[in-house]
Length: 466
Image (cartoon, rainbow, N blue to C red; front, side, top):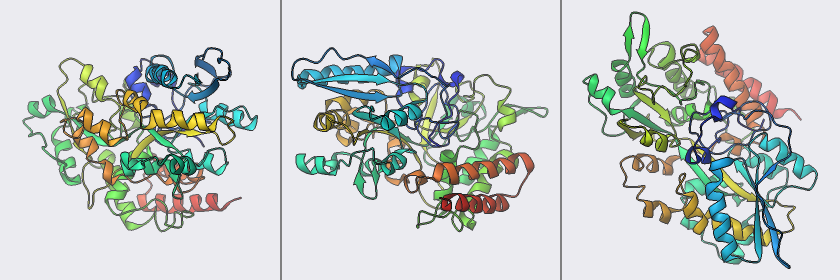
């Protein structure tokens, strides 16, 4: 299953900045007014959610002028549309000015991106350069449609050390570089300074422990009778989906747990291990035992799923994507902290990148574009809208020192690449049954151990099937 089950409502009102990092994490819910970039949608749901169905052919976002004699027309596709295409258009203009022999044709496919892209590949009509989310990289590489960038990197002596290594590796499969990063985000903790002050609770100054997180969330949960009027924590995101695997992964990794075994073929012994079960139990207890986090039933009463933005949740676990929207909100006094720390430091990541069509007749031109938007002047433009993987650009922006961005950047060295990069069937098998069984924990009070035992067994059977 290729990503994102994004609802039409979740897409309304998205700004260019928030749309840029729009759909990435396999298994995420309908995104709020800002979400991560990454996953392509080919069928209903998954990590960041899915766009409404569309039957029209991919629309050209910016039609390139007829190519001059001898010029190459380079087709570039993406899922962003409308104002979110601003960095693309700027990059196009700058690139064409520097490379007059190449004309870039941007093709925006905001709905059913993955389905249409696969159809194009099947018909040998796919674009020269295309966008993928981290949950789909391995699948497309296995299909043989993504060009290995290794020879191009070697020929140009392209220095990949300009990138944050942990981020760049998300675009690799079996040690080979197939994609260059467009944007990404680890997960962090937002907190409302005014609500902390109102409750006479001292605001945290650094990464807190899991126990401290629960303690603060309890103090900041406010009730009128049996009704909660203010939640201490909204987790794992502002999208109202408590089954989002990417939002639960950090708890698992921080507890020393695993989701998939080192053989990359089985989950039994990893997903149902004591360490993983303990982490999932902690997560479930935030909702069921401690009552500090709204579940799906509680969220059903809100038209806007982002309770943190409304002042109805004192803390929020999410990615960087809502930052600019929050900054635009007058009088919104908030801070950001690293993800709460367990037995060890670890984090998950949402990611999107660009690759070259292995069938392209314009591979050299595609590589020039890829370098430009991945590490060159084009990367600087994209960095104005979402996190850059280029260390020098991040330093120039002051991201590692800025009070709001520094906690985000501090988590880059400990991100764990998602399981979907290790097995092409993980989303359809591992994530699917994890979510199904976790839902039974929430709705049927099924024991977490039993749920993970069943999920691991079902996933293994699915992964082993032809």
